[in-house]
Length: 195
Image (tube, rainbow, N blue to C red):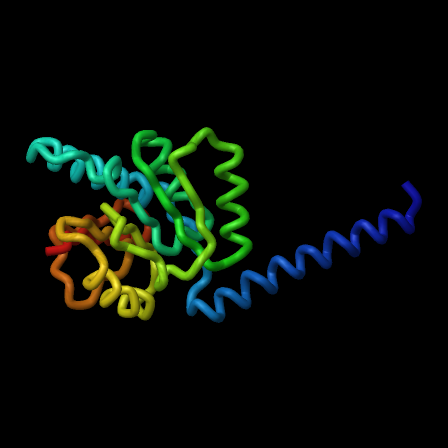
């Protein structure tokens, strides 16, 4: 390959890389936080808690929430949690909502390489999503986003719907359960149920 072609290809690659970095930095600045993948111990803890919630619903004679109403991951980022949930429970319907272009594209590509037809990744504003359809909302956000999401969830969620928040509590909500993960940061998972 001639040196000039190699130089042009290198320049194109570097330009694309720069555009990706700028897109992530810009959206992180606008959101107030950068998209963070959920660690493996936290993903496993969420899956375990979802399994316990589903088992409790079955014992109460209720239909499993995730088959009736979808699980909504508000701020799905790179899609790691939604895909882990889909792998553990192929009958659950999962919708990930993300506004940052690069993580959303990454999650869509990851979904194409997987066999999970029950998962959707939507690009959009998590504050404009119709949570009325949600059986469970999972979020790994920051305190400002949790404060902003709080009135929307209070208004739109159906009674009995669950909220699982990773790291940050929902202000003014009383958790049904708090789980401390066995990861380096001792991450807390807050589990709520709408009255």
